[in-house]
Length: 484
Image (cartoon, rainbow, N blue to C red; front, side):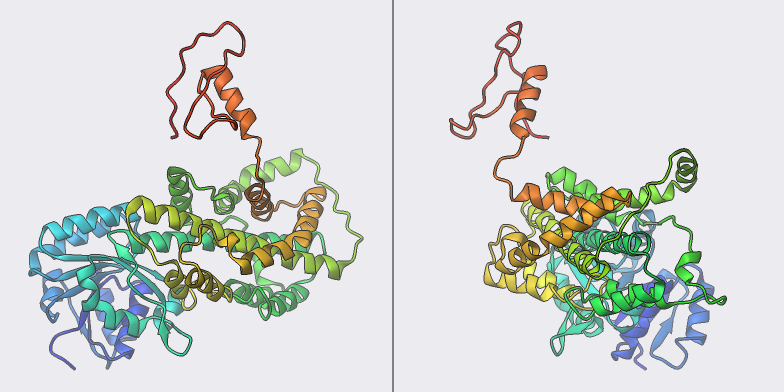
């Protein structure tokens, strides 16, 4: 084993432990540290026994165990712990050394930290790491951004440990400046929230409208995973449907219906509002988790309101095909909205993101990996200036083909009292997106009526604003025109 390590890692929780095992398996020597130092000893004597690890019991010892330029990676809880460790690491570094945050940090924190670390003469990388425990061990998707000069120093390690597609292309490349890497990971997680909720709504529709058994649902999801819906989340949903508890009953039926979250989906929705992007599906997926968490309130409401009687006597096989199309159409909208937000963020934060390469990074290792990510890359390779994913010929054709089944599912769900907030909001978005004239003309008239907020006219150039004295009692004074 080398005397000095190629990289050091702080944080031997699930992700950290598996990621360093991945690094070591690719030939790298790794120094490890954990705030609870007994975890270091347990790891070195357990899963790390006989391997190329250097156990350390202080930050100073960790940094001292590294080759120059030193690369110190943190996989710790987002927020204050990251800042705490940065301040502990910095006194032991030399110019050109690199600090890496591999946690789920908020991109604005990463922008701030990049400036701070660079001001001290060092380099900073904020990298999204997706794939969960298995991904970390076998090959995650990695989305690094920050100090660009640091990328050549970590590229070999990051691309060696990342997932591979198309015969060896790594699902890892440089994303952009300061917070770009963590922003792309935030969008990934937002799309993940949307994908999961779409599948959950399909599950409830299968169970409560089509009265399918868990074995039937398992077979259906397994079949769908071999067709248009080929993806990691459909694959694991098929596995979950088949898993039985010790009493032979489906395990998923034993799980309390209150969903948790770590905040990345919420961050995605908040930034969409800041940038004025209609991220309706992902926002609904976050609100669905909030509603699930109000378990006691829902139980009380279920005693007050009579449930809608489910009446479905149609063609079950046909409706199941329609459900597949509804899921597929909504999934396309989820990615289209996520990419719309990426485009606006790239302009707002001067990141110059490469949208095709981002799709490639998501094709392996990560939670949202799916077959049509390759089609997203093709779309942007063919038209780098594509203004919206739905305007690409492939996605235009697919979303139009999904329409009729999608509408049938939404109508059936509404008539039977089955909530499908993301599937229906995606359809509403699509209908609004392809509508040349929306009723916002009336909305502007209302705003002008009560607040003299002014409006533009269709028979005048854009940028000219007008006001009407709707009641005859107002004056010519108008409110300042602005968009929040």
